[in-house]
Structure formats: structure tokens, C-alpha cells
Image 1: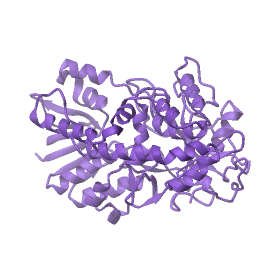
Image 2 (image 1 turned 180 degrees about the vertical axis):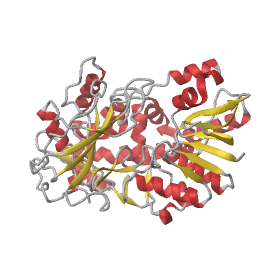
Image 3 (image 1 turned 120 degrees about the vertical axis):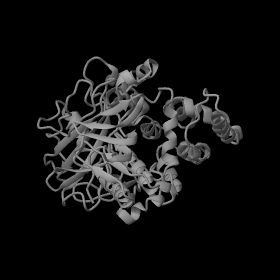
Amino acid sequence: MLTWDTIVVGAGHNGLVLAAYLARAGDRVLVLEARDRVGGACTTEETWPGFKVSTAAYVVSLFRPEIVRDLELERHGYAVLRRDPSSFTPLPDGRSLLLGPDLARNQAEVAKLSPRDAARLPAYEALLERVARAIEPSLLETPPDPFSGRVRDLWRLARVGARLHALGEDGPAAVEIFTGAARDVLDRWFESDALKATLATDAIIGAWASPSTPGTAYVLFHHVMGAVDGARGVWGYVRGGMGALSEAIAAAAREAGAEIRTSAPVARVLVRGGEAEGVVLESGDELYARRVASNADAARTLLTLVGAEHLAPELAERARRIDHRSGSLKINLALAALPRFRGLPGGGGTPGPEHRGTIHVAPSLEYLERAFDDARAPAAPRATRSSSARSRRRSTRLSPPRVGTSCRCSCSTRRTRCARAAGTTSGSGSPTAASTRSRPTRPGSAPPSSLARCSRPWTSSAASASLAGTSSRGR
């Protein structure tokens, strides 16, 4: 009977990283993936002939450079295109805000909306940078359990405390950012609604929250904590789509000796005597290992794969209470031309800097607050209340000469089975094709298992124009 050292359930990028490191350490590793490809949410898929799309995850920055170096991912084809500019916010009155990694250019842009905010921007960025440097080492450390009483955990907790203590007079501001609401922080720093809304979208992306929800300020760190090619605070696109990152990790894992099987869904973990001994595939095959690691979410791992009968009652109950709600809906579009924005010369067949990064459809904090209020309402949300839409230029490998893009909208998906965008128009007036991915909005609801293809238009022409206006050209 063949026995593996480790079986990894799920070939998402986290599971692949684990498999690669274990294989490099000498373990016999088997990775089992239910889908026909690796990557999980980090994949590139051909949604229409000739158009390849990063169907879920779409940018990188927080992916640790230590992993890139250790696994030699660049040798396996991993390459990142820096996002510059990083975001564009069009405003209803024809003005706009274009932000990127260059502080001086950002100040010049912000000064068009508020000279006071432009003057305060360097101090705001510097504060986030100082606090981020204090907590960033924790990303590579096991979080301490302050209630265990173990010396190891107390020592780790002391190290975290020492880093925070070293912040000195920045300490109170750091505590507010860790625990407070993004709106409170941004209101104290800035006066321009457009600037605050642009920054606030980073605090609520993917979350079931509004800018006034406690805890959202912490996510403001994310735009200064990551790095691309050694440049801090920079985000980028993976050449070839996000699937190229997963394929590079998989190649490193295979080179180290790991075996990866796709189309091999796991039904459950084999548990005997309170210990995991392997897994049972949906085909009925049993595979044995000294340990089992799961790349699935905690609730599915504990309640479905392991089974509540093998857990302490309090652990099973905690797993059931995990809140999976999200207000995110990602719409992938294929357009015939670039969108045009009032007051800007680009669009149609002429790309401009506004087409290279994220395009925020969120002119104010109140707009974002109303979007979340609509999402929580029992009735379907107003279609024009999408809080943000995200778009990017593409690698030359991903689309034909026409336009390929993606939008990410923070709005309610609770009463919408599929966001229907097939009737939208691009800057040339030509129809678009669209497909969607939505995240579950209720605890315990199943994640999407396939890409939904839509064929009917949105019920609101305003919503169609909004989504068409957030597209960008593939490159």
C-alpha cells in the first residue's frame, strides 16, 4: 500500500506553495485538485474564443517575495507587469483622479481637487508606511495564541508588542487603524470626497462592510505593505493572467518531486482514532498519508471533509459560525473598443493612462455607504449603486486586438443569480459579452463551481453604462 508523507487537498496557490516547500524538504507529496486545472481562485480561463481572463483573483502585491525567490518562480515563467497608474476615478462633473506609485504625481493630481489634501498626502502615506513596517514581519510568523499560556506564544506576543511599542507617538494612530473604521481615519486626514472614496475602496474590497464599519481601516495598509520587483506599495498584473502564477508554483512543486493530480475531487478525510490517515476520493479510491493538509476554507475542511463527528463540539460550532458573506461580484467583459470618459481624449482605439489600472466608480464615501445599505436591504439593490468597478490592461497573451477586461463591483448579489451585462455597449457602441463570478452572500452557502454565462441585458441602462465605462483595453 503506497503511503504519502503529505496529501494536500486543493491546488489553489496556497496549497501549491505548501506542496512545493514540503517536496523541497524531502516529503513525498500528493496534491489533489477537483477541477481540471490548478490555481483555485488564481486561474486564467478562456471565457470566449480568443479571450483569456483572470476569472477571480486579478492582481498581485502581497504574494511574498521570499516565496518567489525560494521557489525560483521567475525561472518557471512568473513575471509581473507593474500597475502604473494604479487607479482612476472618474467624477460626474467631468473631473477625475489618477493615482499611482509616484507620490509627487499623486500630489499634483490631488491638488486639482484639494490643495490641502495634496499637502497632507505625504504625511498620511508616511504614517501607513511606518505602521506597515512594524506589522509586516508578522506575515511570515505563526500568530501567537495569547491564551495558551505556552512560553513560545508569550514570546511571540512579546515580539509583536515590542514592534508596536517602537512606534512611539504613532502608537495610538496605529491602534485606531488596526481596529477602527476607514471612514473615521480618512475624514480626519482629508476633505476631498473623491480622494476619500478612492482610498476607501481598498478598505472594503471583497468585504461585507461599508467604510464606516469598524475594522475596515486595517485594510488601508494593504496598498503600502506589498511589493512588486522590490518596490513597496506597488501592485501588478501577472503576465499571462493569474493562472501563470499558479502554473509557475506547480512547476516548482513538480520539479521538487511533488505529484499533482487534477480532476480528482476529495470526498472526505479518512479519520481513525482521532487522526487523519488519508483521503477518500469521490471515485471511492482511498489514498493514505502521514498527514493531510487542506487548501479548502475552514468550514468546508472541518465540517465536510473531516466531519463534525470527529471534532470537539465547540470547534464544530465555531466553524458553523464563520461568516462567508460578501458583497462582491466580478464581471468579465469582452468589449469592441475602449471606454471614453468626459474631459479626457482617450477611448475608442486610443489607450490613455486611465485605461491601465483600476477604474473606481465611486465618487464619494456616501456613495459607498448607500451601496452597502442597498446590499443589506431585503429588496434587490438599485443597479446604479455599485460601489467600485475594477479594470485593467492585459498581457499580450490574453486577448485578440479587440478589448478584454474585467470589472469587480461591490454590490448585493443576494437576489441576483447572474449579473446580466450582455446588452452593455463599449465606447464604439458595439455590444459586449460578459460572464460573472459572484461570492456567496450567506453563511454556509456554496461557492460558485463554474463560470456563469449570461445572455440577457441588465434591467437598468444606467447600470449598463456604468459597467461599460469601467472597461480597459487588453495589451
